[in-house]
Length: 165
Image (cartoon, rainbow, N blue to C red; front, side, top):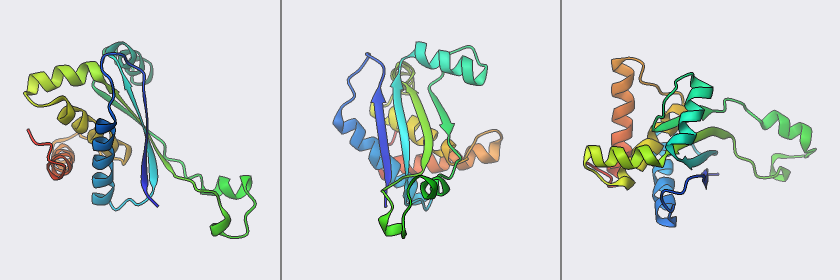
């Protein structure tokens, strides 16, 4: 069992390297380990400002671009497996991962923010990815205590991966 990253690139501003995907996968594994998660899948899509603006407007009612969006899937599909596949034991079942949801990152915003904060684009993309994953797990930053908890978790994971400011 493992936590799996699926990704796609729908923007043309930068090439998404295998090294970057390996780094994001490392962050996914570190975050999952910190949270006691051993199985699941995260879908990641890289977009530009225009695309994330449209998503932010259509799904959140906020008519401007943002840096990262998370769309959680809170469905347990194990019961559906029993319906789709008639299996005599769990050993006969096909491999399947629960999907935590989708993370959408604006490369445009990530580039701007990395320059504004004076750190690498890799660090900014890593921060946004971990931030998005924590949202998928139910964390939020609506008030000061929850924001401190979420920021602490993000910084801990990034530090473990050597992505400090």
